[in-house]
Image 1: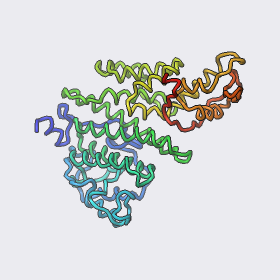
Image 2: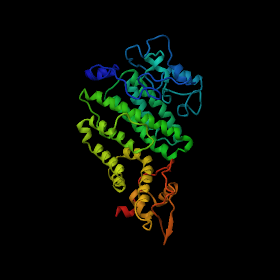
Image 3: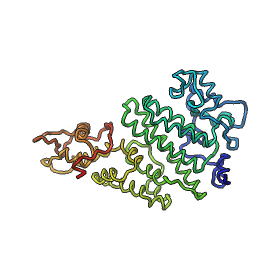
Image 4: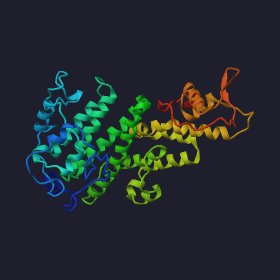
Length: 396
C-alpha cells in the first residue's frame, strides 16, 4: 500500500493529511459536520452507537473503524430485541431475527453528540461492500419500490456518515459517493413515475439528498486533484448539476451557473458531457424545443436521461405556452406534428394540453388546438413523463 493509500485507510484525507468534511451539513445531511438533531425518535441505531465513555466525534481525532459487517453486532442485537428490523433485513420475515448478511447499519442523526467506538464504525472495504449490496437491492422486484427506496435512502446516509467520521477521502470514497448519486438519480426517475401526490415528500427528500451528495462529491474531486488523481466519470457527474437547473422545483443553488462554470477545471468545461448539457440548457432558455429534444435523444447518457425525464413535461408545457402565444388564430397546431417535435405520444400530449387548459378540436380526423387561447395556464401539477418517444415521422 502506498503512502497515500495508507493515509486514506487510516481515515485521513489523501491531500496533505488534512481532514475532510463534505458539504450538505445540517438538517437532513447524510453525514459530516454537526447535523441539527430533530425531535426525539425511536430509532434503534441511536442507542446502538452509545457505548461506554470514549472520545466524542467532534473532539477526538478521526476514528479508524473496525466493524467487519454491514451492521455492528451490538446494533443488530439491539434491533432484534426491539423488533426494529426493516423488511429487507428480516430472516424468513421474522421482525425479531436478522443476520450479518442482511442487516445494514442505520443512519443516526445524533451521532455527532454521542460516544462511539471503533467497533461501531465500518472501514472503507466494508463500506464499499455495503454500497455494492445496496445497489444490488435497487433492482429487486420482491418489494414495492418505495420500500426499497426508503431502506437504501437511510443506509446510504449511514455510509456517508461513516466516511465522514473517519475523514476518508480518496478514489474509493469518491466511487462510493458516485454510487450514492447514481442511486438518487435512479430513484428520481422511478419515484416520479410511481408516486402520487401523497408521496411527493419522497421525491422532494430524494432531490434534496441528491443535491447535497453532488456538492459533497465536488468537494472530494477537488481534494483528490491535489494528489493528481481524477475520476473517469467526473465530467458526467458535474453535468448532473447543470441538468438540475431544468427543473423549477429544485432547491436554489448557492452560486450562479456562470460563476460555477468559471471555477471548473478546463478539462471538465471542455468535456463532451459538459458541452452537451450547456447547449441543452441554452436551447431550453431560448425556446428551441425541437433542438432540445433531438439533443436528448441523440446524446444523453443513461443517467442524464433518467435525471431529466421527470422535468420533460415541464419543458413540454412551456413549449405549449410558446405555441399558444405565437401564430394566428386560424392557423391551428396539429397534435400529430407537435408530438413529433416534443417527442411524446399524441395521446399523452392531448392529456397535457387539457391540463394546461387548451381546447382541442378535431377536424377531418386530425386533432389540433388554435393559438391565442386565454384559458391556457402552466399547471402546478404535471402528469408523469414516460421519457422520450420517437415517432416514425421523426425517424424519417
